[in-house]
Image (cartoon, rainbow, N blue to C red; front, side, top):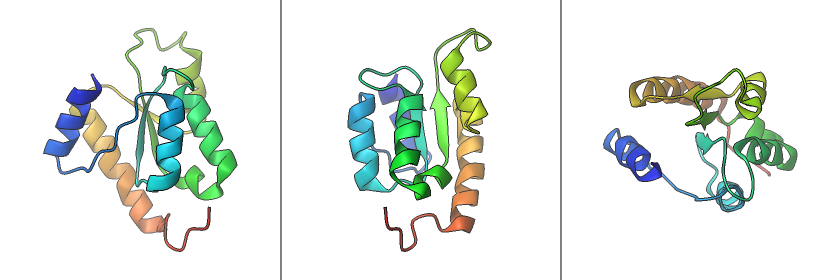
Length: 121
């Protein structure tokens, strides 16, 4: 599934970095200073919510980077991690048109805040 997401986002002009587990993703995010983060809710080694919590503990600037949860779980009312993510003001996207619209809106917010300008993490 990640290959399909990468292909779709790259075709829409995004530069995409991929990690295949939460720990790898956390390490990559600390180096990359991304404009936006897409994360599966359920990943090996760390869940998406654990990655988000670790990022916001490490550096306050990460709290302003848009974080979008992706999940294949069908019953959202019983998915405690997805609910916890929504409470943390993260978006959850399903299809590519919705995902693209959410990403564009969130990136406009990042551009206004200059999240990484003179960042000291």
